[in-house]
Structures are given as structure tokens and as C-alpha cells.
Image 1 (cartoon, rainbow, N blue to C red):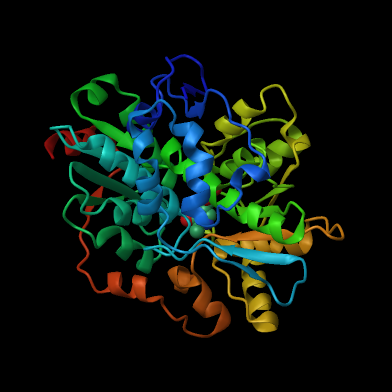
Image 2 (cartoon, rainbow, N blue to C red; image 1 turned 180 degrees about the horizontal axis):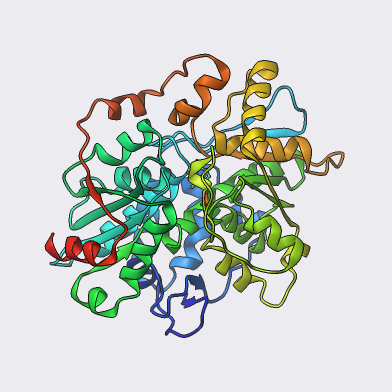
Length: 432
Ligand SMILES: *Cc1c(COP(=O)(O)O)cnc(C)c1O
């Protein structure tokens, strides 16, 4: 399998190179040269993420040095449950819980898979690989957890000062060893800009071995397609129908993975996107005009993205087609509506959502067309205990912290404060 750039200006590479490079040389994002096509029967007997992943990802690894390691990578990465639970008060709705990993967010899946690949690619290298990651909260923690202690790899996490919850900040800064945290005086887009600029500077790329762990990395997208495949297959086997997914969306990595799974023939019906007040995607689907903006600060902070990178992959997949006709729809949810959804679902149904998951719950209640006999699965992207500063005042109760998170809360915190200044960032990268 060859991987091409969405911008078509750099040479195709194999999987290991695409994973290693993060971003294509022309600034585009890597996409598979061709998508394999599957039928449900191809997955006969395969249950669970590791088993489904081995089948789904075999074509993506074919011809690559990592191909022989696919089974081991799947076992390493998919090591926590992703249960689907019915929502008792809402017949026809279930929730796919993706928050049972080490940092209680869906990004643990992609980050662990990427780390498992990179560790195996890096085995024969002498100079350490530097993994750069800009985060509005969850990515950094998941990447730090996934890479912590893996040999030959140094991680640089950049996050916007004052814009992540204290508990999230702790998960970004508690690691030490090969994980370095930077508190940037700016917003998420400033952090992402520093990382993008580093990759766009050929001298820097040549002198330092750099890679990205943001959701622009193909190594994170592929494993995300696996949980959509496994969930859709299980639903199909039990009910004989393809479910629709409702996905809290920021940088669009999670949703593109669902669209890719469907594109490969997995039984997925509609893909519905829920954004917070950063409404570039719903506006684009209505108007056809792609207009990135400055990001706004919202209660669902991990989705505060004004220029979602993965739109480039979606537009590449549906080149020349009207994306709004591809069974994709999107709606924006305001902070007020997020708060209202958290309060009502907890009061009335004892369902407690994180602010991101609450956008999907709101979209389900208010916008998604309810067709009889059509099942909807909303994606829960983080455990509510990660966003206690938002949720506890709303519900007037203390949220129980899951044990994996509780452990991290007691480790010492370490970070360096920096301005969103590229020259200063280059110095840090060169000095270390
Ligand atoms: C990152 C994140 C999202 C958004 O996912 P994208 O792939 O960026 O669209 C939603 N919810 C949570 C909790 C996240 O951490």
C-alpha cells in the first residue's frame, strides 16, 4: 500500500514512512493510495478490536516492514475495552464508550497504536525521534501516556495556558523522563501553528528527526477506523442493520475514521457530526464555502478548533462531490446547550456526559432524524471526571475519578512556560 499526500505534490511513501513523517513534504496529509474493500463475511469469527483490527488493517500494512508486526501492534494498542451500552431512557440510542484507556479519552486508542508502530520503526535508529504534539487538552495526555518510557523517542507536548482543566493539565505534565510539557501563552491554534511551522521548515526537519502525533498522523486515523468497524459489525450481527454514528468533532480525526470505515464497506449508515460553537464544519456543509476561523473558547475545550485539519482528508476522499450528499451532516451546539444537556440527562436519566459527549447527546435529541428501526450510536469521547470544573458546578455533585486517572493525580507536575514564538520554540528543539 502506498500513501499519498492530499496535496499531491510529494512522492508516495510506504506505511512506515508515512507514520514516521507525520505530515507529507508538501504540507498535505497522508491518505491511502487506494482503499481496500470489505464485506461483513470477511470478518467472520473476528470479535474485539485486536481481531477486527488485524483483518481491517492488513491491506494498509501490506508491503511494509511493519507488516509482520501487525498482530503484535494490535495486541499492544487495543488493550482496553470499548463497550457499547444502551441509553436506557432513549430507545434506539446506544453509547460507544471510548474512555476506558490510560487517560480516559478516545485519543488513547490512536496514540497507543501510533506509539506501538513508532517504537518498532525506531528500533534501529541512533538519534532519538522527537514527537511534537499540540493539544487543546486530551491529545497531549494520551500521547504522553502512550509514549512514556518507550526507548528512542522524546515527546514535546504544547498546550494553551489556562485553557485546559487542572486535572487535564496534570495529565500533560506528570510524566517526566522522555516527556516534556510546554505551557504556551496562547490558544490551541498557536500551539498547532508552532508544530506545523516546525514541519514546514526544511532545515529543522533535516537537522532534527521530527514527527507529529496530532490527529494529522495516519498512525492515529487507522486504529480509529477499527473501533467503528468492530462496533458496526457487532451491531450488524445482532440486529441485521447498519447503525448511524453521532460523533463529537473538533479536528475531525475521529469522524474521518468513521467515514473511512464506511467507505471500505463496513455497515455504517449516516455519520453525524456534533461541533461546539466552532461551527466551520456545519457552515461548510450548508454553504459549500470552506472558511476557517479563529477558534472560540467553549466548555468542550478539546473541540475548540477553528481550522479542522482533517477536512483536507474528507475533501480529498470526496473530490468534486458534494460532501453533504454523502450521508454526512453536522450541527453546532452552544455552551448553553451543552450545559443544559448535561444537567437534564443527569437529572432525568442518570446519564452523565463529558462536555464533548454532551454535544452529541444534544444533536441526537434535537436534530438527528429519527427513522423507525434505525439505530444510533453516539460516541462518548472522554470520561466526565476529566472535566470536573465544568460538570460539578452544573450537577452540584462530586464526580468519582476512575482509578487509572486517580493514580496520575499524585505524581509531581513539571512544565516550561513559553510564548507562541517560533524562534524560541526552535531553540528548545535544538537545545534538547
Ligand atoms: C479530541 C477530542 C474530540 C475531537 O476529536 P477530533 O478527532 O479532533 O474531531 C472530542 N472529544 C474529546 C474528549 C477529545 O479529546
